[in-house]
Length: 376
Image (cartoon, rainbow, N blue to C red):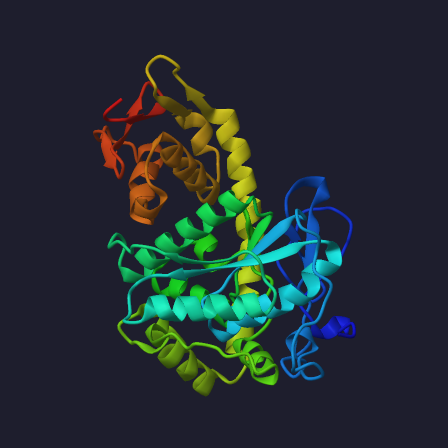
């Protein structure tokens, strides 16, 4: 296959080491960590230019595979157009950098025939030359609602596969449309800047190379290359909040506000992410200066005087970091909890201990906030 034009591909390309920024045209998402990290270029042309130069090469992806034992990246593949397009593009580009490409498809077991569909997806991925390819069944719990429970089970399976195969990174097929939906959901829930910042292009081992590409382009790429895709019926089910945002809320906004709402929401996420990153860095430094831990009593303290000098946005981040450090689960800690803790600094009237999720207790004593687990 001839080299696709740079403007129209999801390309892995060597570049100088450094920290990845939010994806913009010609930006990069790093594969691996540290000075040896390899960037995954995620600059895409408009949707009319197909991923992997699919218009010219509809018959397959001939390439020279990486040698056995080369570093591995995994692609998380549901079988939908987004993840299949990403798997196809990665299978074409990664071997040029000496990277092997594998895939994981997760069977949530929530629909009849899901195991057969997962095996079919795995077979398609093997036909593209990906190796290893795994179909992983998971058990979805109930904590946090069906969408959150399925997400937790899926990421646990991906983490386990990445650890077992010692993968450098796991690629996710989230697009600009997914980003817009995430921002709207954050707005509806009254979340803070971190939630409105949407999904990061890079977090831990996870990479999202398609955040600047719209969903229509991935489907066009699959159609042009005759790649079968599976449309999850849950994505159309109004019982799921994200499905309602996708098929009801966003179309109404586009109709009444004009085209470009999705792009504007994704741009909002980038701007919020810059702000949230700066505030988080400030909070990390402040916590390092103010936090003290009693090695014998197992409790931590923050000096109230130092907290009171911080802007509220930074102070609440410091409080959140300390509550999480003490043992509160992140998924159960909400803004209302932090507001009550903040009142121990800004509205102190002798109120008693606060009891937070995870058995964390916060008390104001002798000019300090004291954080401890109740069972410690």
